[in-house]
Length: 228
Image (cartoon, rainbow, N blue to C red; front, side, top):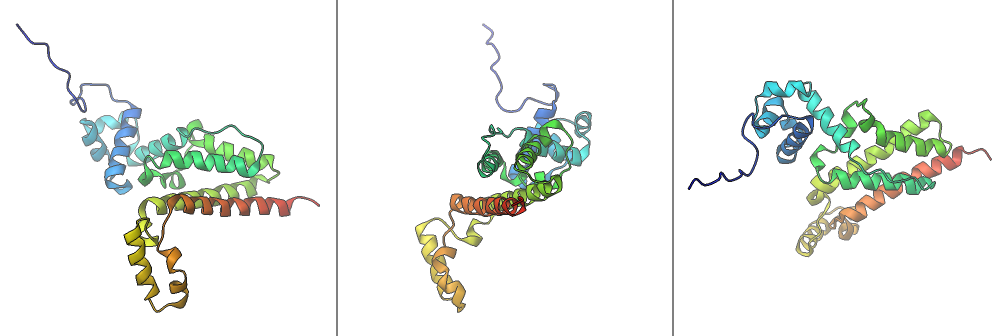
């Protein structure tokens, strides 16, 4: 009796399935997650997919196309919240939604600052932020400055959260104690004084503080600009 073939696990062999842009994006994210943005290239992504690198050109235009596709995917997959009519609350809700999405692929998050996107998906979050700022009475030019400032604060906080924890502090008791002792013995008075706080790193608290500070600045600026 002939036994039925069992299904193979893992990626399909070369040429076994039709290549899609979505599959290319996922493969590119796999490269970024494992080796960083600098490792992205047509050969690296093709290797993950098990295809000839030339076949990728039917869907993306070289390395820049790969990076644009990932940035577009990150922005387009954000679950944008409904607007509630509160400037601070609406901006914070978008920031939170972006953070939730970006933390799935933190190494790729900075791409949204470096890629110029023109697609509906890529521009949808930008449209949402600008619409909130315009509804609050912000001039279009000022709205762009505010958008970029808040986004820079958000991305910087995310990158620090993922990559720089040990530099800024730690969240385990033994590590905190060791770091605090080293800072207190640094011979630098301000550093020693702040040692209990420098030694500790709470990613959620740092994110909350950074976004509160950035949004405080936005709200205060708009308040000052309103006619009396």
